[in-house]
Length: 89
Image (cartoon, rainbow, N blue to C red; front, side, top):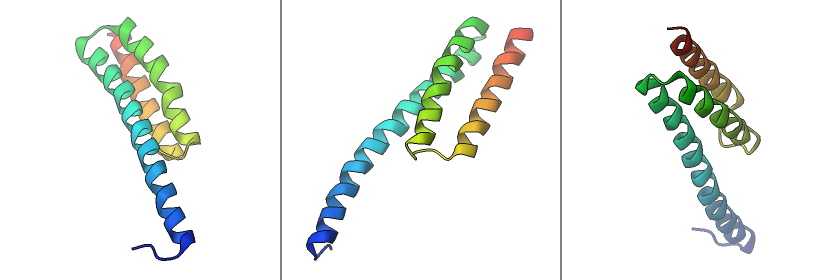
């Protein structure tokens, strides 16, 4: 339990940041799920559009410190490869 005024303030700040980060993470997952669903449906056009929308959202998560840079790059790369394979098939 926080005792000093400084630790009480840090606890309040952490609580606030946790809510914000949770919302950001959830938003990113939603965008990624839309790409996954578009790929699963086999619609190349929708998958490309969903990927274009998801990419900046993922990178915004990187700048905000919610997602690691390499994790975001890996996810974008794998999704892009799947969308490309869908378009050529």
